[in-house]
Length: 325
Image 1 (cartoon, one colour):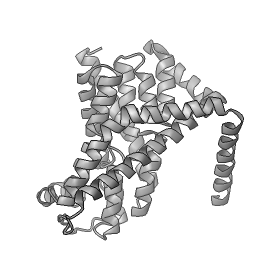
Image 2 (cartoon, rainbow, N blue to C red; image 1 turned 180 degrees about the horizontal axis):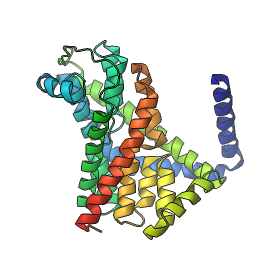
Image 3 (cartoon, rainbow, N blue to C red; image 1 turned 90 degrees about the horizontal axis):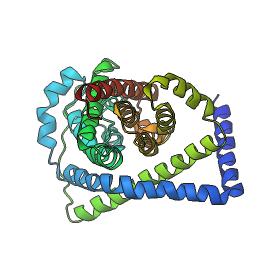
Image 4 (spheres, one colour; image 1 turned 90 degrees about the vertical axis):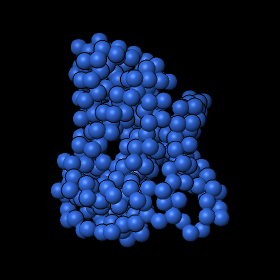
């Protein structure tokens, strides 16, 4: 099975490279669009928080909070108090900071695969600048809509954390978060690490933006998109909703951009669901870190799928009742 998977991936990668060689004008411009989308919409939203949250981590500013939250997280999520710290950092910074912190905690021997899996269910979230700023204000043109999307997104993450809280054993640990003893180059280290992280995010966005366009051009997405159009037929925005949602499952930012072309309660709720799932682009970014922490990836993907459904239902209900659109 593993050999078959690698063979299939190799053929898919070769086919993608062949497309770039045969249609360079088409797909070089598509790659440029992906990079532009990252530079204009994602970079300004994420980079400041990448830097500031890393700086807080280095200084150990939230170490006391992690200790204070230990009792609550132990009962509610069956996780040590540091999980509250990771949740807050993820909620402030966005993908893939939560996954990265879980991986670092595992590498330090301060958690195990079971707890890391439970934490991944609620500590993998988008951040306020992306949800409220990029999607809410820049794309949908509505700050209140962005705030509702963010609230529903985070609430759905907490619900998923509770749903999977019984997974595996719970090993009670005293986890402390101390500030770095070597503070001589703390600003340089934070800037350097943040730059590398944000460039990696841009790389993933570019690759999956390109992949989505290739799949769309060659009709691979026609059948699932057509089925979504039938499902969304009575919404009045079936074409935009189906295309945006389908592409959003591959690359989140592009999907939200398309959904925002016809702003309404339904497309905004779909965007909230897409953000909660993260798309394959974010999933692969997170997987790079979570696999190192021995996270059960089946549980992780199941939790992200449930989070997408829950956040959509919550967001659509609130937007429909408040008549924002």
